[in-house]
Image 1 (tube, rainbow, N blue to C red):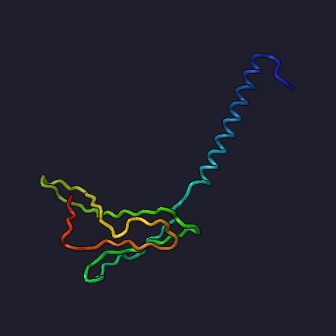
Image 2: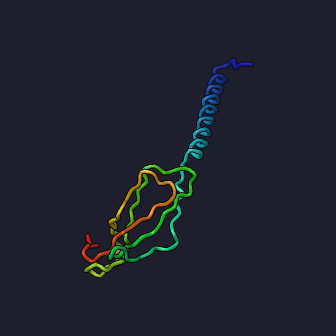
Image 3: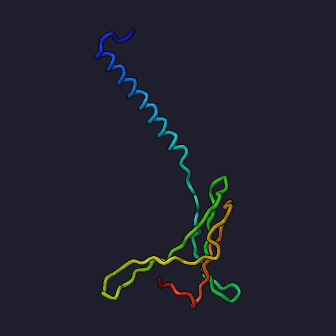
Length: 125
């Protein structure tokens, strides 16, 4: 069985092209679904402020819930504060907190995030 007219050849060509494109699209969607990595990081329920070596520090723990290690993991922590500007407008501002250690080469089990609290540091930009 084969097409004999020009219209039939065009129809078979379009149908073949759409079939190949549909197969490629379905393969791409399935591959994207399975190749998407998820971090699966658990945060501790409590944030602790305590004194260590005579200085106060804020700390919390992160845990890796994956079966494998995360390579070159980094963390950034921000203080989010609602403020009133000089003109009386409400504004939400984000201030980055300086951490004792911001990255780890291998995040296998847990990671403790530490920010030292002292009055000499400015939180204003």
